[in-house]
Image 1 (cartoon, one colour):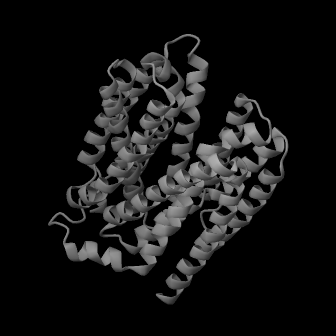
Image 2: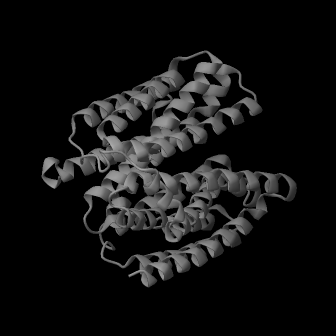
Image 3: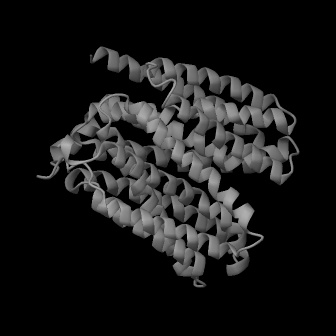
Length: 387
């Protein structure tokens, strides 16, 4: 099976897909102020629109695994990129409320499937160092997430936002064509996936621990993405532009660290890498929570991005090693639980922020770090025991 595809071509094609997902994830938040003006959306309608995106991503994350294991990656990736193209063009040109909502769901659905499938295919083609390869893949998510707001800010003086969004949609169309012509690894379960195989996932205690590690990892990342700007504006009295720069520092820290994990640190044992990352995260939280001005807070956020960078690649690498014949379905399983954690913990943070203040963002993050350390200890303990 190895000889039927070009490993490097598949890897860089997957990186394009992850870049597209990074753009898609940040797109709605980047253009929401313009959408509110164009469609006369109030705060509740804008919030509803924001809630549609993660629902689409969860559906995409749920579907991709069994489809990829049963039918291979090519069709799933090509169709998902077309869904993102349709979603971006709808976002750019529609003036109808329900089409706007559908467009957000479509690029969430396509993005969620592409995120999962690109992670799974990189794990499949990496015979060694899966975590390092997945970290390099994650760099392209960071480039997309950092690049879209930068592109909008640079071009908005010259072009209407819908022109920029529509042009970005063309990148999704190019990706769809590329996915359709590149040869990917063959389907691993071409004869079909049995319920016995799926049931085994639910009975695997180590896999369940990894899934709930990602529940807290994803929610930790979501807390920083969703609440940092509000925290900096209220606790540090930062202007909105400075608060957004702080958030960019977090994404930059994660991107730089993933690049290092995929290159300089690629030989470092997974357990050692993760515990060093926990140490960086603790130092970052101390700096961030004690800061009373923007610059040290932004430095703390850069460190925090670096500290959190290893979580997903390390755990997905372990899943890929554990389930080489069912990697897509296993990735679906853990990613969906991770996304549910993101939604539930962030909803809880919203209730706490409303009733007790944004200061409790740091309370949440310290608690999440403690849980991640405990769960990682349990996971590596079981892996050592099962050797």
